[in-house]
Amino acid sequence: MIFPGKICVMGGGSWATAIAKILLTNPEREINWYMRHPANIKKFKQTGRNPSYLTLVEFDTSRIQFFSNINLAAKQSDTLIFATPSPYLKLHLKKLKEDISGKCVLTAIKGIVPDENMPVSQYFHQFHHIPMENIAAISGPCHAEEVAYERLSYLTFACRDTEKARILAKSFENRFVRTTVTEDICGVEYGSTLKNVYAIAAGICHGLKYGDNFQAVLISNAIEEMERFLEAACPGPQRNIINSVYMGDLLVTGYSKFSRNRTFGTMIGKGYSVKTAHVEMEMIAEGYYGAKCMKEINDRQFHVNMPILDAVYNILYERIAPSIEIKILTDYLH
Image (cartoon, rainbow, N blue to C red; front, top):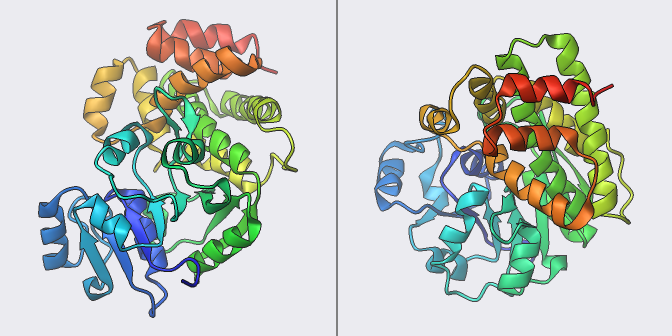
Protein backbone atom coordinates (compact mmCIF):
# COMPACT_ATOMS: atom_id res chain seq x y z
CA MET A 1 0.00 0.00 0.00
CA ILE A 2 1.30 3.41 -0.98
CA PHE A 3 0.53 5.81 1.86
CA PRO A 4 -2.09 7.24 2.39
CA GLY A 5 -3.88 4.57 0.30
CA LYS A 6 -7.66 4.63 0.08
CA ILE A 7 -9.01 7.55 2.09
CA CYS A 8 -12.34 7.43 3.93
CA VAL A 9 -14.12 10.50 5.29
CA MET A 10 -15.89 9.54 8.51
CA GLY A 11 -18.84 11.84 9.15
CA GLY A 12 -21.62 13.60 7.27
CA GLY A 13 -21.48 17.16 8.64
CA SER A 14 -20.25 20.43 7.18
CA TRP A 15 -16.55 19.92 7.92
CA ALA A 16 -16.63 16.35 6.60
CA THR A 17 -18.30 17.66 3.45
CA ALA A 18 -15.69 20.39 3.07
CA ILE A 19 -12.89 17.83 3.47
CA ALA A 20 -14.44 15.62 0.78
CA LYS A 21 -14.67 18.62 -1.53
CA ILE A 22 -10.99 19.42 -0.97
CA LEU A 23 -9.88 15.85 -1.60
CA LEU A 24 -11.96 15.48 -4.75
CA THR A 25 -10.50 18.56 -6.43
CA ASN A 26 -7.86 16.04 -7.50
CA PRO A 27 -9.64 14.64 -10.59
CA GLU A 28 -7.87 11.29 -10.26
CA ARG A 29 -8.91 10.60 -6.67
CA GLU A 30 -11.78 8.46 -5.49
CA ILE A 31 -12.78 8.30 -1.83
CA ASN A 32 -14.84 6.28 0.59
CA TRP A 33 -17.36 8.18 2.70
CA TYR A 34 -19.09 6.95 5.85
CA MET A 35 -22.39 8.50 6.91
CA ARG A 36 -24.64 7.10 9.62
CA HIS A 37 -27.98 7.52 7.86
CA PRO A 38 -28.76 5.50 4.72
CA ALA A 39 -31.52 7.96 3.80
CA ASN A 40 -29.00 10.79 3.54
CA ILE A 41 -26.78 8.66 1.33
CA LYS A 42 -29.75 7.89 -0.94
CA LYS A 43 -30.58 11.60 -1.31
CA PHE A 44 -26.90 12.40 -1.85
CA LYS A 45 -26.68 9.92 -4.73
CA GLN A 46 -29.88 11.30 -6.28
CA THR A 47 -28.88 14.97 -6.15
CA GLY A 48 -25.08 14.94 -6.06
CA ARG A 49 -25.21 17.11 -2.94
CA ASN A 50 -25.14 16.55 0.80
CA PRO A 51 -28.83 17.00 1.68
CA SER A 52 -28.10 18.53 5.08
CA TYR A 53 -24.79 20.45 4.96
CA LEU A 54 -23.08 22.75 2.44
CA THR A 55 -25.93 21.95 0.09
CA LEU A 56 -24.58 24.18 -2.71
CA VAL A 57 -21.51 21.99 -3.19
CA GLU A 58 -21.89 19.56 -6.09
CA PHE A 59 -20.10 16.20 -6.12
CA ASP A 60 -19.37 13.62 -8.78
CA THR A 61 -20.82 10.70 -6.86
CA SER A 62 -19.27 8.21 -9.28
CA ARG A 63 -15.98 8.93 -7.48
CA ILE A 64 -17.45 8.26 -4.03
CA GLN A 65 -18.14 4.90 -2.44
CA PHE A 66 -20.69 5.56 0.30
CA PHE A 67 -21.04 3.45 3.45
CA SER A 68 -23.60 3.50 6.25
CA ASN A 69 -21.77 0.61 7.96
CA ILE A 70 -18.74 1.91 9.84
CA ASN A 71 -17.07 -1.50 9.89
CA LEU A 72 -17.23 -1.97 6.13
CA ALA A 73 -15.99 1.58 5.63
CA ALA A 74 -13.00 0.98 7.91
CA LYS A 75 -12.23 -2.43 6.42
CA GLN A 76 -12.09 -1.08 2.87
CA SER A 77 -9.97 1.98 3.72
CA ASP A 78 -6.36 2.69 4.67
CA THR A 79 -6.59 6.24 6.03
CA LEU A 80 -9.59 7.26 8.13
CA ILE A 81 -10.40 10.98 8.43
CA PHE A 82 -12.66 11.53 11.43
CA ALA A 83 -14.72 14.71 11.16
CA THR A 84 -17.50 14.24 13.70
CA PRO A 85 -18.30 16.47 16.70
CA SER A 86 -16.17 15.42 19.66
CA PRO A 87 -19.18 14.69 21.94
CA TYR A 88 -20.40 12.06 19.43
CA LEU A 89 -17.11 10.35 18.63
CA LYS A 90 -17.48 7.59 21.22
CA LEU A 91 -21.04 6.95 20.08
CA HIS A 92 -19.79 6.36 16.52
CA LEU A 93 -16.90 4.20 17.66
CA LYS A 94 -19.10 1.96 19.81
CA LYS A 95 -20.27 0.39 16.55
CA LEU A 96 -16.71 -0.11 15.31
CA LYS A 97 -15.63 -3.74 15.72
CA GLU A 98 -13.12 -3.74 12.87
CA ASP A 99 -9.47 -3.69 13.99
CA ILE A 100 -8.08 -0.31 12.91
CA SER A 101 -4.74 -0.58 14.70
CA GLY A 102 -3.01 -0.87 11.33
CA LYS A 103 -4.77 2.12 9.79
CA CYS A 104 -3.69 5.75 9.62
CA VAL A 105 -6.06 8.13 11.42
CA LEU A 106 -6.37 11.82 10.61
CA THR A 107 -8.48 13.64 13.15
CA ALA A 108 -10.27 16.76 11.98
CA ILE A 109 -12.07 17.03 15.33
CA LYS A 110 -11.48 20.26 17.24
CA GLY A 111 -12.36 19.07 20.69
CA ILE A 112 -11.63 16.77 23.61
CA VAL A 113 -13.19 13.32 24.09
CA PRO A 114 -15.64 13.79 27.00
CA ASP A 115 -15.43 11.60 30.11
CA GLU A 116 -11.89 10.45 29.29
CA ASN A 117 -10.87 14.11 29.00
CA MET A 118 -8.14 13.42 26.47
CA PRO A 119 -7.30 14.71 23.01
CA VAL A 120 -8.65 12.62 20.14
CA SER A 121 -5.20 11.35 19.13
CA GLN A 122 -4.57 10.00 22.62
CA TYR A 123 -7.99 8.34 22.64
CA PHE A 124 -7.27 6.47 19.39
CA HIS A 125 -3.84 5.52 20.66
CA GLN A 126 -5.07 4.22 24.03
CA PHE A 127 -8.37 2.59 23.07
CA HIS A 128 -7.73 1.51 19.47
CA HIS A 129 -4.00 0.79 19.78
CA ILE A 130 -2.93 2.96 16.87
CA PRO A 131 0.73 4.03 17.06
CA MET A 132 1.06 7.77 17.62
CA GLU A 133 3.25 7.93 14.50
CA ASN A 134 0.16 6.86 12.50
CA ILE A 135 -2.14 9.51 13.97
CA ALA A 136 -2.30 13.05 12.63
CA ALA A 137 -4.44 16.08 13.37
CA ILE A 138 -5.62 18.74 10.96
CA SER A 139 -6.37 22.26 12.12
CA GLY A 140 -6.11 25.91 11.19
CA PRO A 141 -8.35 28.89 10.34
CA CYS A 142 -10.59 27.13 7.86
CA HIS A 143 -14.39 27.39 8.01
CA ALA A 144 -16.24 24.77 6.00
CA GLU A 145 -18.46 27.46 4.48
CA GLU A 146 -15.48 29.27 2.99
CA VAL A 147 -14.13 26.03 1.58
CA ALA A 148 -17.50 25.64 -0.15
CA TYR A 149 -16.92 29.04 -1.78
CA GLU A 150 -13.33 28.05 -2.61
CA ARG A 151 -11.88 30.97 -0.67
CA LEU A 152 -8.16 30.66 -0.01
CA SER A 153 -7.54 28.76 3.23
CA TYR A 154 -4.52 27.41 5.12
CA LEU A 155 -4.38 24.09 6.97
CA THR A 156 -1.77 22.62 9.30
CA PHE A 157 -1.13 18.88 9.60
CA ALA A 158 0.36 17.72 12.89
CA CYS A 159 1.97 14.33 13.41
CA ARG A 160 4.95 12.96 15.29
CA ASP A 161 6.06 11.52 11.94
CA THR A 162 6.38 14.73 9.95
CA GLU A 163 6.94 12.82 6.70
CA LYS A 164 3.48 11.28 7.05
CA ALA A 165 2.14 14.76 7.79
CA ARG A 166 3.69 16.05 4.56
CA ILE A 167 2.14 13.26 2.51
CA LEU A 168 -1.28 13.86 4.03
CA ALA A 169 -0.91 17.60 3.51
CA LYS A 170 -0.07 17.02 -0.16
CA SER A 171 -3.42 15.21 -0.56
CA PHE A 172 -5.22 18.42 0.48
CA GLU A 173 -3.30 20.97 -1.55
CA ASN A 174 -5.15 22.62 -4.40
CA ARG A 175 -5.83 26.05 -5.88
CA PHE A 176 -7.64 27.26 -2.74
CA VAL A 177 -5.96 25.26 0.06
CA ARG A 178 -2.36 25.65 1.19
CA THR A 179 -0.76 23.50 3.84
CA THR A 180 2.03 23.30 6.38
CA VAL A 181 3.18 20.61 8.82
CA THR A 182 4.29 20.37 12.44
CA GLU A 183 5.15 17.67 14.96
CA ASP A 184 3.19 19.52 17.68
CA ILE A 185 0.08 17.34 17.62
CA CYS A 186 -0.48 17.84 21.36
CA GLY A 187 -0.40 21.64 21.06
CA VAL A 188 -2.53 21.68 17.93
CA GLU A 189 -5.27 19.56 19.50
CA TYR A 190 -5.40 21.43 22.79
CA GLY A 191 -5.15 24.77 20.98
CA SER A 192 -8.03 23.95 18.65
CA THR A 193 -10.16 23.06 21.67
CA LEU A 194 -9.30 26.20 23.61
CA LYS A 195 -9.96 28.54 20.69
CA ASN A 196 -13.58 27.33 20.65
CA VAL A 197 -13.91 28.21 24.34
CA TYR A 198 -12.41 31.65 23.72
CA ALA A 199 -14.77 32.19 20.79
CA ILE A 200 -17.68 31.58 23.15
CA ALA A 201 -16.18 34.22 25.46
CA ALA A 202 -15.96 36.64 22.51
CA GLY A 203 -19.58 35.93 21.64
CA ILE A 204 -20.74 36.42 25.23
CA CYS A 205 -19.01 39.81 25.33
CA HIS A 206 -20.55 40.72 21.97
CA GLY A 207 -23.98 39.79 23.31
CA LEU A 208 -23.34 41.98 26.36
CA LYS A 209 -22.47 44.85 23.97
CA TYR A 210 -18.81 45.11 24.85
CA GLY A 211 -17.15 46.86 21.93
CA ASP A 212 -14.30 46.12 19.54
CA ASN A 213 -11.75 47.68 21.89
CA PHE A 214 -12.53 45.16 24.59
CA GLN A 215 -12.76 42.29 22.12
CA ALA A 216 -9.17 43.01 21.05
CA VAL A 217 -8.03 42.89 24.67
CA LEU A 218 -9.96 39.68 25.27
CA ILE A 219 -8.46 37.89 22.26
CA SER A 220 -4.91 39.06 23.00
CA ASN A 221 -5.27 37.76 26.56
CA ALA A 222 -6.76 34.52 25.21
CA ILE A 223 -3.69 33.79 23.07
CA GLU A 224 -1.46 34.40 26.12
CA GLU A 225 -3.65 32.05 28.16
CA MET A 226 -3.46 29.41 25.43
CA GLU A 227 0.32 29.70 25.32
CA ARG A 228 0.61 29.26 29.09
CA PHE A 229 -1.45 26.11 28.95
CA LEU A 230 0.38 24.61 25.96
CA GLU A 231 3.74 25.23 27.60
CA ALA A 232 2.54 23.29 30.66
CA ALA A 233 0.66 20.51 28.88
CA CYS A 234 2.82 20.02 25.77
CA PRO A 235 6.45 20.84 26.57
CA GLY A 236 9.08 19.96 24.00
CA PRO A 237 7.99 20.81 20.46
CA GLN A 238 9.05 24.14 19.09
CA ARG A 239 5.96 26.27 18.48
CA ASN A 240 5.24 29.87 17.60
CA ILE A 241 1.92 30.81 19.15
CA ILE A 242 1.28 33.47 16.50
CA ASN A 243 1.27 30.85 13.72
CA SER A 244 -2.02 30.42 11.90
CA VAL A 245 -2.80 27.05 13.48
CA TYR A 246 -2.90 28.72 16.92
CA MET A 247 -3.56 32.46 16.70
CA GLY A 248 -5.08 32.39 13.22
CA ASP A 249 -7.63 29.77 14.20
CA LEU A 250 -8.43 31.70 17.36
CA LEU A 251 -8.98 34.93 15.42
CA VAL A 252 -11.29 33.46 12.79
CA THR A 253 -13.32 31.54 15.37
CA GLY A 254 -13.57 34.56 17.64
CA TYR A 255 -14.63 37.02 14.93
CA SER A 256 -16.19 35.21 11.95
CA LYS A 257 -19.90 35.20 11.16
CA PHE A 258 -19.48 31.50 10.33
CA SER A 259 -18.31 30.67 13.87
CA ARG A 260 -20.94 28.60 15.64
CA ASN A 261 -19.06 29.01 18.94
CA ARG A 262 -19.15 32.81 18.70
CA THR A 263 -22.84 32.61 17.71
CA PHE A 264 -23.57 30.38 20.69
CA GLY A 265 -21.74 32.77 23.01
CA THR A 266 -23.59 35.76 21.61
CA MET A 267 -26.90 34.10 22.41
CA ILE A 268 -25.73 33.40 25.97
CA GLY A 269 -24.64 37.02 26.35
CA LYS A 270 -28.05 38.18 25.18
CA GLY A 271 -29.76 36.15 27.89
CA TYR A 272 -30.55 32.83 26.24
CA SER A 273 -30.27 29.76 28.43
CA VAL A 274 -27.72 27.14 27.42
CA LYS A 275 -30.51 24.73 26.48
CA THR A 276 -32.37 27.29 24.37
CA ALA A 277 -29.19 28.36 22.59
CA HIS A 278 -28.42 24.74 21.68
CA VAL A 279 -31.93 24.15 20.37
CA GLU A 280 -32.11 27.32 18.27
CA MET A 281 -28.64 26.85 16.74
CA GLU A 282 -29.40 23.30 15.54
CA MET A 283 -25.63 22.75 15.33
CA ILE A 284 -22.96 21.72 17.82
CA ALA A 285 -20.91 24.42 19.55
CA GLU A 286 -17.91 22.31 20.51
CA GLY A 287 -16.62 24.95 22.89
CA TYR A 288 -19.52 24.23 25.25
CA TYR A 289 -18.18 20.72 25.82
CA GLY A 290 -14.58 21.88 25.52
CA ALA A 291 -14.99 24.34 28.39
CA LYS A 292 -15.91 21.58 30.84
CA CYS A 293 -13.23 19.18 29.60
CA MET A 294 -10.45 21.77 29.63
CA LYS A 295 -11.49 23.08 33.06
CA GLU A 296 -11.32 19.56 34.51
CA ILE A 297 -8.02 18.78 32.76
CA ASN A 298 -6.42 21.97 33.99
CA ASP A 299 -7.74 21.68 37.54
CA ARG A 300 -6.58 18.06 37.89
CA GLN A 301 -3.26 18.11 36.07
CA PHE A 302 -1.72 21.45 35.15
CA HIS A 303 -3.07 24.23 37.43
CA VAL A 304 -2.39 26.98 34.89
CA ASN A 305 -3.84 30.44 35.49
CA MET A 306 -6.74 30.52 32.98
CA PRO A 307 -9.25 33.24 33.92
CA ILE A 308 -11.03 33.28 30.54
CA LEU A 309 -11.58 29.52 30.55
CA ASP A 310 -12.80 29.74 34.15
CA ALA A 311 -15.21 32.56 33.29
CA VAL A 312 -16.77 30.66 30.39
CA TYR A 313 -17.08 27.53 32.55
CA ASN A 314 -18.75 29.51 35.35
CA ILE A 315 -21.28 31.02 32.95
CA LEU A 316 -22.13 27.78 31.15
CA TYR A 317 -22.00 25.27 34.02
CA GLU A 318 -22.27 27.22 37.29
CA ARG A 319 -25.01 29.45 35.85
CA ILE A 320 -23.38 32.66 36.96
CA ALA A 321 -24.87 35.64 35.14
CA PRO A 322 -22.72 36.58 32.13
CA SER A 323 -22.78 40.28 33.07
CA ILE A 324 -21.39 39.50 36.54
CA GLU A 325 -18.79 36.98 35.41
CA ILE A 326 -17.43 39.12 32.58
CA LYS A 327 -17.24 42.14 34.90
CA ILE A 328 -15.09 40.03 37.25
CA LEU A 329 -13.00 38.85 34.29
CA THR A 330 -12.18 42.43 33.23
CA ASP A 331 -10.06 42.82 36.36
CA TYR A 332 -7.77 39.97 35.21
CA LEU A 333 -7.13 41.29 31.68
CA HIS A 334 -4.49 43.72 30.58
